Image 1 (tube, rainbow, N blue to C red):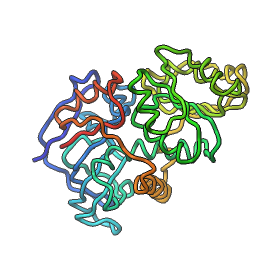
Image 2: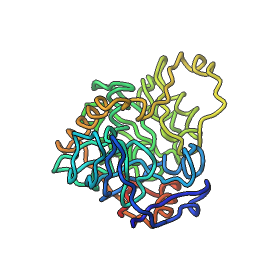
Image 3: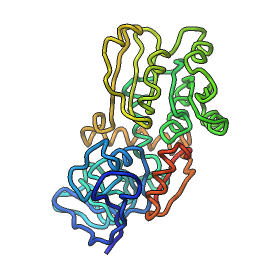
Image 4: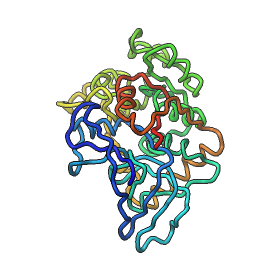
Length: 325
């Protein structure tokens, strides 16, 4: 028997249940991973609250982890028992000691990348990869705005963008988080609790504003983000930390400067095994080179998943958070 966190209904952290289950055997094309570390992400909260619908109940939670393959289904030829692996997509259920998922969603992990680092960086790092390298391909010299710059994705994105020669203006909620974003390579920070974000962006860019805004906050920053964009700029809305952006009249994009809008996701970019592998290699190169360092600022036991999600939702966390089975 093995431990797994599941939900039978949506709601607050109290709906998370720790249960003992028999680890499922992998079917054809699948592998079973014994998790050594599990990533914590906002998307986990979206499924718990019902913002995103789980396929069925009871449902596991979590999509990110790292560990060792301990069973292989028929037809799997590129992975074997004992392989060190990591994953960031696939069926819900990473909040567990064992997780079965399609082999196509699993990547071999280089020996010099620790399980905890992989679990803390796969989803966030691949998100940074598609944001900075594909959604709006940064080439160096740009000045951009990145909300929640001290968070999990933001911490990685600041380092990656800095390595590309990009000036990052990062929004943060405290002086502590401002210092963290600066250490990670942010060129400037804006404390949204004390400063007018739009006016500060205008000052920092000498009135030019920015060509792209990366926004994972959602509802609370929607209009602010649009007002920070230069004409024909790109609004990249990739999260809903404060709630979903709803009821948008697309005419506002015209009113604010013929703006572009996209709502990307990892599944939309890593939609084939080949593209997934290429993105992982890009991320692993940044980690192995030391250009991106992952700050695991919080560790929780698997049984403390509810407590961990509360900390994340209340924005009390910095960097990355992992669960340890």
